[in-house]
Image (tube, rainbow, N blue to C red; front, side, top):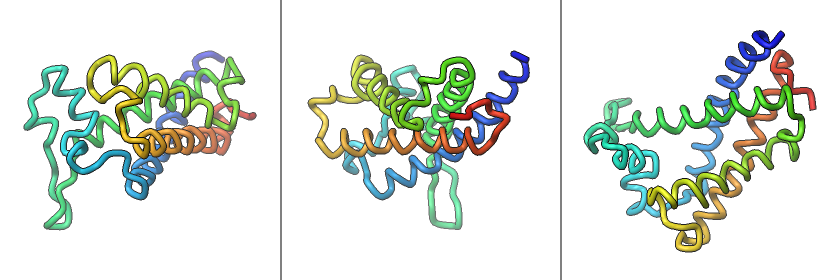
Length: 165
């Protein structure tokens, strides 16, 4: 039984992470959280650089359609984060239903607070929340709510997830 929950959480979390990650990227395309100067080295790139990864790796791109450079290292970080936390959400929801409060939106808010108000500012990856522009906080807050909701929607849409709330 536990092995089934873990296996199902892994694949459902992977799917939810991919879908919610795409939604979050789309959200940021419509409501950019950072200005172009601050986004020249985005938070995932800066975090990797703080961990000693050279900037030529963190800013590595792959050319698509002859004229578009896609920053694949940033995308790997973005989707990796989304997948890991989606797996966590699905796994925990099998044992602790309150994680699904607000249809996943509360989960998104908790992750936003943990990373954008505590962890990343403490690591000096991003400024403290009160030193960020208001639109960055608003975009990230709403974006994480939508992200958490999409994780929930995918999880309840795949009944093997064990998330039936």
